Image 1 (cartoon, rainbow, N blue to C red):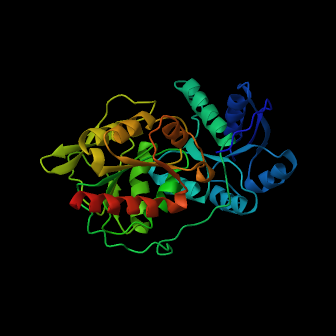
Image 2 (tube, one colour; image 1 turned 120 degrees about the vertical axis):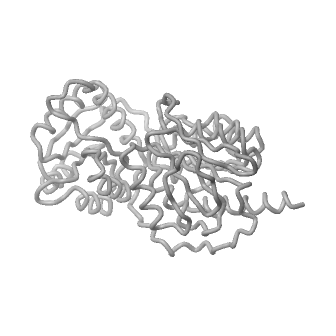
Length: 359
């Protein structure tokens, strides 16, 4: 994440085939003191010319549009002129696959379309979209590189030391969907269990887990309450609940609860990391990936104090260097590592911990 000190307003280009939605979004953006709408396009072909002449800082983009759909446009844009894009579409199970694909193609974030005529919650929606535009305007966006399964140079290590006694605990937010994919694809099928708190709406976590499951050698699922934690498995926190790891005799199990949000999030990275500190201690390895804010920094520090070894994604490879920065600043992270090296470094630490524990 690279920050620039500037008093210039954030320049936003809106792309949506609905004149009403364009009008609502324009009103929201122009009501913010630090941003302005510089243009509004009804389709991607029109937007393509406006990008050249208006040079916006952030695009808002719908998925379903005439002439060219939003995903096709996004793919072309990220190859030719990478820039921050915020996808605005309906957050439904029907649309979740397209929305996840947009993140894969390089969109910074996504949220629901505003609902015309529904006054309740509109101020909260306006605050949410303004916040996401601010985050997007500061995001470090690069050309999209598709990571395919089987292309990793990291060999299957045959982690004989892997067991439920070792856990990899991961937190992520903005940009985390692609960072998680790059982290998980090289992992061997017998790697220690991985538990993930990713800030994501409820409608998307199951589809996200299914998508990762198709790419990873490990089995990836949403976490289930009271489910036993097993090596070779990745557990994604459902979007509706906090996820914790607990002891049950000699085993680890998952606990889900719907306690109030922590650091404005549920699932919260803080909650997961603190539970790992309490019940796994030195048998845990913490990983903080790209994301806005500070969620998880204190919990990761508690993990370190309990004997865990922790990694933070480095600034150069983060979409948003917020959560990793916070972890580094409080002294929670032992190392900052590029995302492309994260799996190798974490596995090396797993093996070193296994050897030390046997001595």
